[in-house]
Image (cartoon, rainbow, N blue to C red; front, side):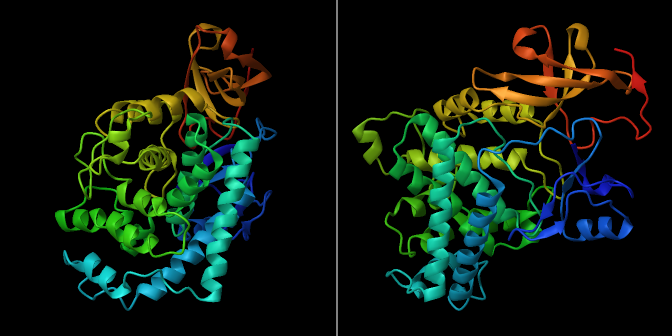
Length: 416
């Protein structure tokens, strides 16, 4: 199977994995043969890409660090919590929301006490916390071998992205060695980190080009609004609110909203931990997870970046923007290429061949086992073989964007 951009789908393509809405409802079942009407529906719903059968690697199922069921259940609970908050704060949000006093006015009208949640709102919040528990359980019981991101629909991107950030933050914190209680707190804060962004118009959030000054001010207001809302939820810790507030701060002090700075280290002295000008470690972890998810996720206006490009950007951002030690731990502990990823090989006897990752191992995260399938001339191998790149240091590897792995649909076998 392979991932194809929705705008490049053709009549007759066969869906390799069921396409689901945020609540788990099946939109298109596995095995569905696409026609023009179904393709138009996918485009209209903002589905950015679809897994298709290719007859070459349909037996290789992409791995997940956290199950799709847990992701979906947590995202649904998160959406319900946020929708409830939006309804509750509607009256508190001024018509003049774009003014510099919009957030402060909203906070004043909400009052200083925790929000008095209805029974349904309390159940929704408890559902979110159960989802967070499941994420922590699955990460502690499993490992780092698997995809950290999910395919996101246009309308529900924020909720799915936030769950991905919670998963990646939890995995990162586990690699660092934080205890279970802190993993739960961090995961909850990461899930709620973009709460303030749900009040921003989608035309701004999904704008592919540069933002104008007013749009930039609108974006930069969301961490403070998220903080004011999260801190009024009946949660056992104030840390989730500070994660929402600080996840766009930078190590060099040029972030927003408060210009905090970091130490580019995981361990810090008591004085550094108590310094109110310093970012919290949990917020620094969330910041790395947030950038990783944004870069690697498929969006309606662009495909997710290939793994080595994501790695290069994270490395460039480490130091001035992201905590250097956290980025280093992340890249050393999480595989670049997970099962189901299409890649191109360079060097040795495999030069110019394309294939799909069969498995990754913790012992050699950047050297997976690859099933070699398509030759440099675009023809399919007669006898596909699997190469363990750990034993072939001369062969380089790079990820392929959606739709790139396959030649034209009329494929001829290659001699190999």
